[in-house]
Image (cartoon, rainbow, N blue to C red):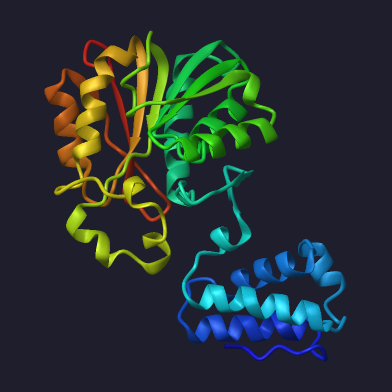
Length: 294
C-alpha cells in the first residue's frame, strides 16, 4: 500500500500509486493512477498537469489512499469511479451492469459497416439491443445513426435503470425504449439491426476469470455449461426479429466463432466471417437472413 502524506505533491502521489500498482502487476498502472488521482482531487487531465507541483492536503491524501487500497484489491477502476467510457461516451454503471470493454466496440464497428453497405446513416432504422446492460451498444449506435430508434432489453430491472439513465444523460432517450425481457422474447415487429453482447463464459471457466471481471454480475457473464446457452436463445428468436434485409451482430468469446456460426446456419441464417478485435480475436459475428447475401 503506497504511503501518501500531506507533504507530497500531486505528481509524487501519482508516481507512488503507479509504482504500487506496477508492483501488484496491474495492467495499466500509470493510467489507473491518473484516473484515481483525478477522481479524488476533482481534476481532469489538464488540471492534474497544471497542479502537479501542488502539495496534497490531509483530506486529499486520505481520499486518494482509500481509492488506491480499493484498486489494489483488484476492484476495477470503472467500478471505483462509477463510470466508464465506451465509443467516446461516458456511461454510468451499477452493480447489475457489466463494465463495458474495448473489444465490445468491435460489435459497433461491424454493425455500422453493415448499415453503411445498405445506404446512408441518416435513414430511419429500428434497432434492438438484446441484454443491454448499461445500454452501451444501443447508445453508441443511436449516437452514430441520427434518425434511428431503438429498444434495449434486459432481465435485470437495475440494469435497465442504468441504461435508461445513460440514454437520458446522453440526450438519446427520445429515441430509446428499455423493457424487461429475456433477450427478444417480448419484442414485436421486425428490426433493421439487432445487436447483443450475451453472457458467453462457460460455467466451469468462471473461477479462472481475472479478479476484475469476476466482480461483474454473474448472470451477465455465465453462458452455461458450454458458454452457448444465450446464443441458442438468440438464434431461436432471430428469424422472427430480423427484417428480410436486416442485420444481426453478436459478440463472441474466444474460440466461439465456429460453434455460434453453426447455430445460426442451422436456423436458416447466414453468418459472415467474424470481425476481429484489436487483438486479432474473432469478436463480432455478422448474420443475415439466408436468402440475403451475407
